[in-house]
Length: 136
Image (cartoon, rainbow, N blue to C red; front, side, top):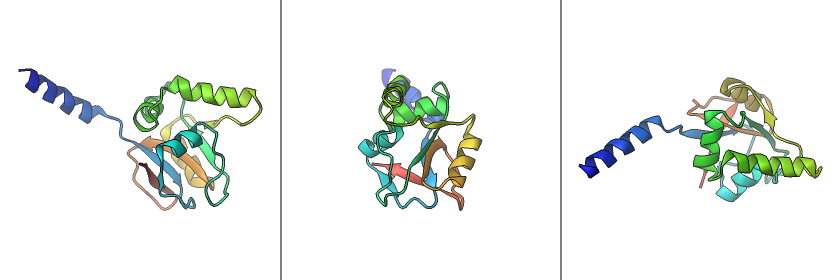
């Protein structure tokens, strides 16, 4: 009985998991990021791509389910930890906060229109102006 309950729980969880994708502008030369690099970029500590291009980070509100999923599933952080990192850097004058957008559609559009941009959404279909990168 326990095995059946566990199996059902896993099936339900996988059915409702967010599957957050990291997206970048098509011009970004990077195809994969290490977990440390992803944390540094979304934590606003890494501001340039390896080719020296400027990184522009777009995010959703701290309470948005996709933002929560990014933090927990992809970055292995809690949203408040990411917010604390941004606040510390902004208050110290060492960085600017990422640009917060209203919804996923706007996030995709802003990433597609901004060279060097990075963001995240739930399962997006790749098009000419954005690409999906993986975290390994």
